[in-house]
Structures are given as structure tokens and as C-alpha cells.
Image (cartoon, rainbow, N blue to C red):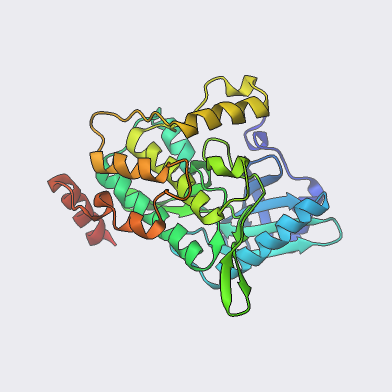
Length: 315
């Protein structure tokens, strides 16, 4: 298999369509069960990421319309820790959509930890990166948007001095989670089971759930990876299990989580992870309380202070 065929390939028709819109296709860089991501070059020479989606049914059409609505909002209201969306190009004739985004040349967070052979990062770097993701989620929630698919795969890395800036991406499952009723607003309870099993809040498999609290749980799984160097709910050999068995086994782990942290990991960071991974959404820590948690507010040791000072001098 050729390098650019690892994640699938675009048809010649797709390439010609994009070329007519001013984009020269390059290497494929990722995929999921229903979309393809690849590099493309603009007429001015800028290299961008392009997400390709073929519309095959009414359900996908519904999700796509919602995603376009949200990405259009993000295009007009960018945030420094959310991947920029430049345009959505629709081909009505062939039922396909191309979303043009900025390219994170550092790859994604899951690949970063795979290359590290799943070892934890230093506390000060964990806090620096987590603060970026937290600010992205807060911005989405402040604008009534629930992401619903937060995971390390959907965090893209952009080189920033000696480290990276993290940006949240892939709003395919995102939803405007607040509706107005007269003079009042109300959080919409979701019934759609979405996201990856390892990162998904346990309540989404059982009943109508608050998508904003589910986001906090998923973000807690990412924080666990920072602090411990591995996902807390990884099931080895899960590829051999049926989907229902994988869900049931993961659910059992999440209802009585037994989190194993390295001795060097920060105790206040561990406490925050446990609060975010509370299986009961009613007692799970709220977003505002995360910002005011002990770990987020403590200054850290001299090494941390040196790290923060070096970052501030470069930016």
C-alpha cells in the first residue's frame, strides 16, 4: 500500500472538483468510518487540511447540516485553541462536502502519546496543555455548544516554540445544547450515543443526558492521559470483542473506577481527574470549579516557573 493510501484515497472526480475550487490535493492524513482528511495546497501555496464527507442517508444529512452550522459559526468567531475553519464547500450534485481547515503540523495528541510509548508528561506541561483544552471547551459551552466527541484523537498539535499549542477539532457530533423557551433557556437532553467508548461518559448509554457534563467526563479522560500516561479505561484485546461486550466491560470499569497513577504524578491533579471521572453527572465537578481547583491554581515548583517564564518570553 502506498503511503498516501493508508487512510483511503479520493477519486479523480473528487480531486478535479477541488481543483476547480482552487485546491490541489496532497497526502491523505487520517480517516474515520465516514470521512477522510487530507492535505491540500491553495493557489497561494498555503497548505491546509481538508475533511471530506460523502452524504449517504438522512441521518448523516442531519448531522452534517448541524456541523456546517457550527463550523460556520466558528469560522466567524475563531478561538485560539479550536482549529480554524476557513470554508465549507458543498457539491450538491454528488452529495459531498469539503471542510477547509488550518493544518496542525504536529499531528494529533493520540499519535504523540503513542510515540512516547504511553508515558506521562511533566506536571507543568500537563497544566499548560490542559489549560488550553479547558479554555476551548469553556468557549464552546459559553456559546451553548457541546462537543460530544472530545478525545486525544481530536486534539491537533501546532508547533509553538519548544512545545505545542493544542487545538480541539472535529465537531461532527457537536450540538447547540441549549434551547430558548419564552424568556427562559433550557439545556437539551440528548439521547444519541456518540463519541469513543473509552472517552464517553457512562450516562450516555443509559438515559437522556446533559451533553455539557458529558464533555467534562471526556476531558477528564484526556487529563488522565496527561497525568498517568495512559487511558484509564483501555480494554486490551478489545478488537476481538463485539461492540456490545466492549461497551458493557467499559461501563463496568467506569462505574467503579480503579485509577492507577504513577508515584510522581501530582496528588491535586489526581484528585481533579477523579472529580471529572465521577460516574454520576449530578455530582461530577462543574466547569467553573475545574478552573478553581487546587491543581489549576497552584504555582508549582521552580522548574514549572522556569517553564512558564520561557513560554511567556517566546510568545
